[in-house]
Picture 1 (tube, rainbow, N blue to C red):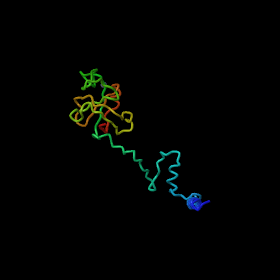
Picture 2 (cartoon, rainbow, N blue to C red; picture 1 turned 120 degrees about the horizontal axis):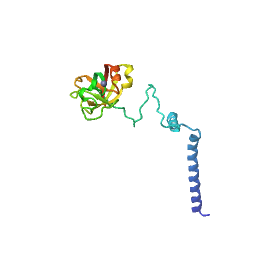
Picture 3 (cartoon, rainbow, N blue to C red; picture 1 turned 180 degrees about the vertical axis):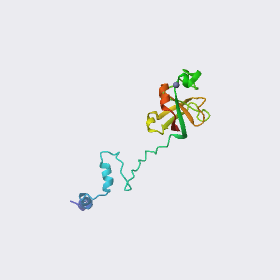
Picture 4 (tube, protein in one colour; picture 1 turned 90 degrees about the vertical axis):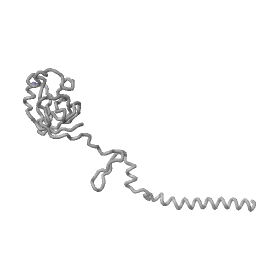
Length: 178
Ligand SMILES: [Zn+2]
């Protein structure tokens, strides 16, 4: 062996020893399983259901960034008095059996008559009756008819029979435009 060989082998030995020493420095830390990452953070990634929404200390549930707060889509129009009508002669006189003022067939659960100076014909409305017994009538309707007595804050709700119209009487209702 020449001196060059000895130097070369010596260098390799030094490099190997240095590398080993470095590994020895790192490995005890890994072996001790030091938490480099906060446990809660690490567990969040271990969760099987990543969609679980964490609860803040304040008790509030934070909204995921992709969820936007619902904008109110309904615009409150006002408090109205509702009467009820059907397509009979007592209710509609000479218009009995005919179409609505906007040319549609009057339909139960959809047609209401309004003062078209207050609510434009064709407007989709949401009705919520004050009295709980009227809750079955809550829902979406379309302003598609008018009536001589239906002015200002009065509406007329189309129902299936004259008896039903009489039974309903006059009711307070809140109206939203949807
Ligand atoms: Zn009638």
